[in-house]
Amino acid sequence: MSDSAALAADIDPLDLAADAARVVRERTGVPTHEVALVLGSGWSGAADLLGEVVATVPAHEVPGFRPPAVAGHVATIRSIRLAGCQAHALVLGARTHYYEGHGVRAVAHAVRTAAACGARTVVLTNGCGSVNPAWGPGQVVLLRDHINLTAASPLEGATFVDLTDLYSSRLRAIAHEVDPTLPEGVYAQFTGPHYETPAEVRMAGILGADLVGMSTALEAIAARHAGMEVLGMSLVTNLAAGVGQSALSHEEVLEAGRDNGERISKLLAAVVGRIISSR
Image (cartoon, rainbow, N blue to C red; front, side, top):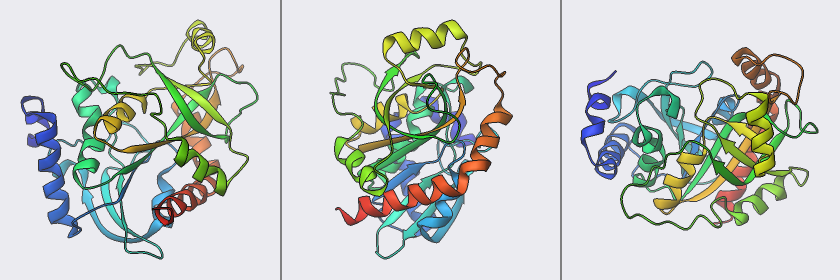
């Protein structure tokens, strides 16, 4: 663990994000990043299609960040000048999951840093299991809502934030301009790191979830609190436990990312370009 990460728990999370943003500006030479992307399992190739890489910073050299603990995630923070314009994207490959045990502040730190860098829009991506048997591996789903089953929140004290339109309907409409066939669904975040049991998957379905995973919801709440507009995009990597017949494994997640990486990367790059042009 880096010294900055070790000290993170003792610093106000917004102050830590401001400190991290200062380092990002110094290391990239970019004063403002208009959009941020958190790239989950299977989505990392999108960064190469967004535009010109201005700078790549090892995540652990930025205050509050840690190297990712999950295979398939990228241990860098990249600044990219988006193709065809002067806007910049901050690509965050160093996602901290709640199950890593560093607390909710660490989970929310990336999106808070992005907000402190000036980003008013964040795209949160993930790989997930499908509760809906019609959505098999390779299906991309736009998130219209989530169910937070972690029993935690990134907000502290009397901090009341409206989550009615947490996953922006405007951004979903823009994504549909790129691909009208994209379905919308509800994502349930479990704590992990174990996969859900069939009974837990049935419970999630009864509650209204279409997808299950171990990220995104806590980040989305923190992003809304920071004043960001949120777009959530999930790649189905497997049918959830009890929906499909095969045993679950992280290799299955990685394989789905490899098989669909080029297609979903092009999709994501096109969506980000359309978001920027709509500003």
